[in-house]
Each structure stands twice: as C-alpha cells, then as structure tokens.
Picture (cartoon, helix red, strand yellow):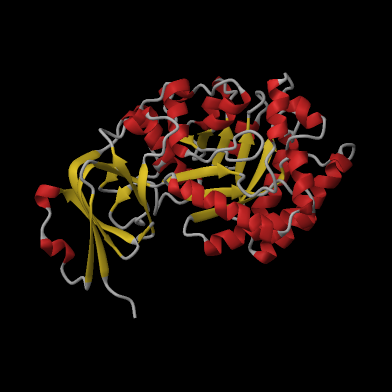
Length: 420
C-alpha cells in the first residue's frame, strides 16, 4: 500500500530555471535569461513537482492531506533541475589512455584512427566483453554522473560494429534503463566507423546495418534514436541519408554526429531528415546556421571533446546571435571525452566559449532535455514535471557552479521524487 507522501524543500536560497508554463527550448538572446526565485520553497508529490513559490507565500494548506511529510532545509543552497546529458557513449569495455599519450606525442585523432585506434580499438575490446561486465561498469559510471547532478542521459551504441556486438551494447543499455533510477534514452550508432573488413566495400556494411541490425533492433525494442557519424573520414552525406531513411522506416528519429572534423554537410542532412539534434559542430559556417534556423533540430555542442582533443571551438556566440538555441552535453566516452561531469562542461562553456552562466545552465537543462526528447517532463522547475532535480552544497549563487571548476557542488539528488 502506497503512502501519500510529500517532500518540501524549504528556505531555498535560489530556485533556478522556474517556469509557469513549460517551453520546448530557449534560443538566441533569450538564453541569457534565467528565471530564479530567491528564498523559495518547492513541494514534491509522489514523482512530480506539485508546487513552488516564495517562502513568504508558503502555508500548510499546500501539503494538506499528506500522510507523511519530509522537510529538507535548503538554507544557503541552490536547487536546480537535474542535468540532461543528451550525448554519451558510456557503455564501453575499456579506457583508452594509451591514445591520450599518443596525442601528447603528436598524433592526431585521425592518425590514431588510421592505425586501428579510436573507435575501432573500442570495437575490438567490445567484442570480448560480456554483457554483465559492460552492465556493471556502466552502472558505476551512471552512479558517478548521478552524484554530479545528471538525472537523465542518452547512451549510444557504436563500439560494436558487428550485428552481435551492436545488439549486445543495446541490450546492456536496455538493462540499464530497467534498473537505473536515471531516465535513459538509447541511440543506435552502428554507423560510428567503417569496420576494417568493409573498408573497400562500404555499401556491404551499410546494407548489414539496414537489413540485419535494424530489423533486430525493432523486434527487441532496443533503441529510441538512430545516429550516424557524418564527417570527414567516416560516413558521407549520401551514405548518411541512406541510413537515416532506413532508420525512419523503423520509427527511429535521427541524431547526427556532425561537423566535428570539417564542413562536411552533416548539419544540412540532419535538418533535411528532421534530426532531433546535430552534435559536435566544431566547424559551422553561414550555410549551417541558415539550415538550422527555422528547423526543429537542436544544435548540440560537446565542450569536453573539443577540450580533450584540442579541437577548434564551436562558434557558439555567433550561433546564438543568429537566433539559434544551444544544448550542451558531455560526450562521455573512453577516447575523446572521458568525463560525464556536466558541472565541468558548464565551466568549459563559460571559460572557453564565453557563454554566461545563464546561457550554460539553459543549455544543460531545458535545451538538452529537448535534445533527448524529454522536454515535456524534464529540464525545468515546472508544475507537473518530474521531480528530477538536485540540491547544492551551500553556495553564494548559481554562478559559483561553473566558477568552482573541478569540484562537485551537488549535495543531494532527487530523481522521480526519490531522494539520493
């Protein structure tokens, strides 16, 4: 028998990202705006945000009828919606620190890939790993990002590159969905790299994805989205279009790896096929911005990858000035961004991309929720949305989150009304 319990967060120093009416995303100059209530309360009923407001307006009628009330004093602390990390590869078999050393010694990401490193290296190790090993290591990473404030995460396959290994990865992600408290979306990324055996017959691998992987994924209910690495040295625009069309027949909306390594048309093909997001975007020109304007595709920047690989920085200010929204994600993976710390992603956004704390928070919450298709119930403090949020340690203001780079400001995480 379920007890009618309400949780009250009281004396909140700053209640951040509040909305009276839920928005899909925030764009352009509006990204500088962040609605904050100071000296506030928030009431959670079961798994939802029931009410919020100023402490001066709080009264006992707001919790009438509850059989049990849990009160949390948030004096000196900030309450924010949990981060939505819309781009990760956090199911992997092993780390790749040797490639980190290779890059220090002067090899580029593409040179490492040509030598069998990079994605192909992870694919070799994936083949040998058991589902239980993958599940346990991924659960450890999920626990880590939860403690850092992430309450929703998208996880991609793509380190399999064979029918067996891709399905194995996706089954692990499905198991994580069923057992982790985090909201998880699953993305099939069979077109992450071209396996060595198909180097001279690219269509053969593409046909393997279309005719063998996709039907199995549909039958087993293993994916929410389909991704393609459309970039220099990976999959062409024409190949990407072929894969996206096939994915749409299985109701898999696209999410594209685009323009990490050059102006390769990934943004335009993503918009053409109504991708939910186009991600990376280190290389963006006027044509890409023009294509995104008026679309429903979320431009998603991955500051961790640019930082770790020393890549060019996405022209975020130019994109926002043109009226675009921006989402931020961690790209947590073993090769190019071995961290899922969204607090640090905000620090990078502020320091390297000159985003204001308000813009960075919008990009990690409401906009990144849209980029993983959960904006209707996550990404902001809004009545009726899921109670997915975190309480910080005592901080002077929300701007201290990106300011104190490298430290964890999170004290308590609440997911679907459960306190962790």
